[in-house]
Image (cartoon, rainbow, N blue to C red; front, side):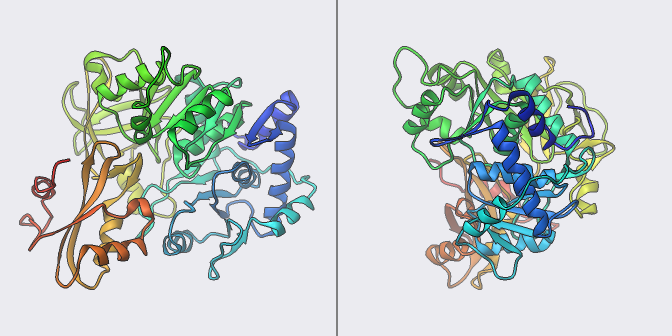
Length: 488
């Protein structure tokens, strides 16, 4: 596919060259590329009747399904911008993001509607409206025009949305083909939420390629997932580290539990070398850990061949990606010395949507700065040292302390608060919050946070202190608080 095209035009090409090939398998129903292309066209036409069009933002707040994938491509087809929203968010979180980014249309599950937003329920009336369309409107231009605005930060407070163009999104597909081995013969088991960057990109990239996507959305038990890999003859699977840790404890026979996979992928957090070795032994030898970000996509991959000292790295740069380690003013640090990570590739976003200040900090001189600290070894591999932005990664999901702190501080009994990562052997990290306040207890804080945050962002524990340790400049000294966290 040539630069400048709309990503949805790939579905039309796949319908011509392999129209009867299974595109999406959902339960007992299979959509061929012929039927997928036609359905996407009809949804696209219907979105236009609802006021969506080139440059408008369409919020997609849906559970994982074949229709969700079709809607993503339909939004792209009309030249609009996909704004992925997590259906598990509270109403306050959904409202905040939609008002901030001024969505034109918000697509939600049947039976869910927010009166102050331009909601369209994807129920019977939606289905009828789609069915009436001919699907004859032409595909909008793509190329350097935006197609996805993927949230990288808080849903409370001020959201940050890196904007990806059709060309940049296509470049991420190409990286998956070259560095990860994705191809049109794959059967990709979609077992990671489509809201998340990896789940969305790999699933849409599989359809772009002409492969088969099998919908297997969470929640599910580990044993059910193992059975699905065999039943659907899956070749490719993306899982978060938390689930991998649960899977490696399941007894196996003489072969790995997922021996049929061509590749098993993980992203969101790194595994300890011993855990990684157990994954390759017990689950699948072709295990690849994928380091990246919402803004920049994939950065590096840790491959099965990376053993010994290399097992402590996050691997080698992926296709067309250049990584540098620099100091605070952009001077390159020698190999082995720690500094700020920056990288660039054709798949890296170059700005946040309507946020010039945040853009100038993260995107500088053609480089993206993810806020991580690392070093490049003599072997050219990237080693993480720390996270400059203090992101908490729980079950493979990024949680930003600022939004948790804002929710806690809105409680009338709290005068000061700070959120920290609390290491957990299975989830990777939990959210712990240190509190300064009176006439407040853990139960009331838990209820307060559950009304304002998605369940996976709610703190695991609240710890009460008389005051927070602070520097002369008033900045909380988090390291002192880390030492107070109980070990597990």
